[in-house]
Image (cartoon, rainbow, N blue to C red):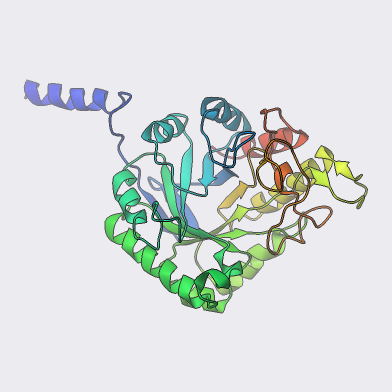
Length: 336
């Protein structure tokens, strides 16, 4: 009996040892709610794709500093556009108490992608990692039928099949997708294996209507996988002057977050776009440029133009923008 007690105590102590495998948490869907170990989970999130100056590739060199800033913001979820293959990075994110929505692309030249089937290798390897919240398939692919022989149904078939394959190897994490705007009847009917619908939504500074629209077409949970404003005004409009304008971004994000968290009966929350500016998006990657292009983005506040390199809540040097305090107040004012 004493021996059994010693063994149990040893296992309990070792479960918290750094570097050892962590016990996976069970993430589940119940009605319109997301549960982590049976407790309701509100997504207070950010999209995270850190690319340094003079590069177009993701780099986690600033991860420790970034996580400290995220914790200050009250963030509990980050959404990444491609898998994180470095276990040390996953461990550090988990140790900070933040969870990840891991995104898989369709064709990434065989690197953890859906086309090759290698995404399942990643799921099998990391399905028990404490950092994982959900698996995500695709990002706004409904805007790109040209990627699927001109027929978007080919994507929905592939997505639904991939979701089923994930469920066969991991029953502890839901499968989601980041759909461009409200999914239509075709998307919903062809994708029954999607558990949670993420939606990239740019409806000026008020996405309220989409929550009602979603309630009318589905009983599944949803969240805003992208929303927010950038800090550059291409024109003078709505009282905001042309040029870099952090106040425009701060005002827009405040109204957007207010709308999200006033509608928690119909949404899980939001992963705001985005954590840091991205100098690689619109021109030379050694300097910050206005412009860029994103489909269906005329609803970007307040100039109707997606200035892709100005979307961070911090700049490339991690200086806080005006919107930082807005997000911080809103996220920290919500339940843990």
